[in-house]
Length: 81
Image 1 (cartoon, rainbow, N blue to C red):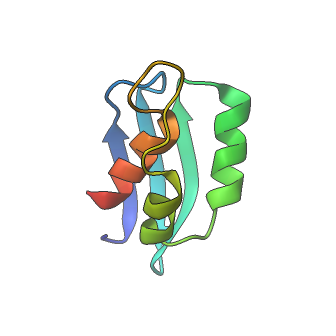
Image 2: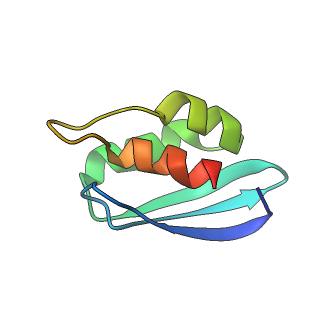
């Protein structure tokens, strides 16, 4: 993944967009537009400083309720792009 700021438009989750920065191969400043504010702030803190591959591995396949995806799963997809 290239260095710098990234923005990902989500599909099928409550969060509409995800923004994050890649610096020195690790992810920083993850921000979600929409979604469950408290939960997504905690996800951002827990994943701070991980590599995109680590985040994709941990978050991929997570679902929310009856949905086939979640905000965390959408973050994993953003990391894989």
